[in-house]
Image 1 (cartoon, rainbow, N blue to C red):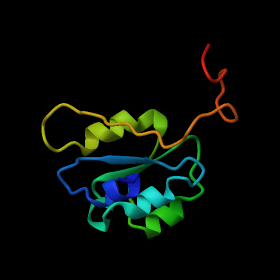
Image 2: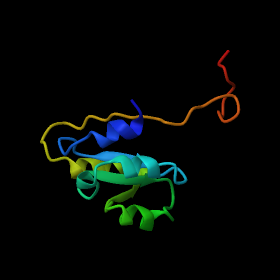
Image 3: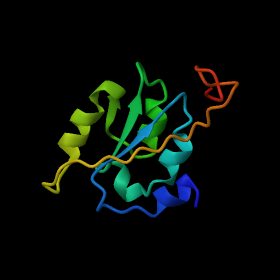
Image 4: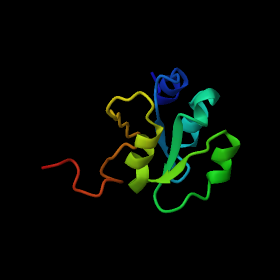
Amino acid sequence: MSFETALSELDSSVDLVAIGNNASQGLPLAEALPTTMRADNAAIIYGTSLPEQPIYQALGYQTFCARDNLLKTAAAAQTSGQEIALCFINTIEHNDQNYHAPWPPK
């Protein structure tokens, strides 16, 4: 199952989906999330700036935050009264051409 398919099957039982912009690489994921979740159950995360913000806004996203503020944003979005549980998916494949440590490890 692709990440896009998995995202398209989510519903509002998920309090917050945080999508990293990562130089616009998050746009396909943002487009896959159901439109009914974008305004209230999603946040677009960025490093230091987000020049693509108008694109995400046009898709229905309203919450934007720097990576440093993700946990604060998650806590504010939480509505269930339960502790925050995070699931992290890194879609960047590191290899010997783009990994910043010797690969494969010795």
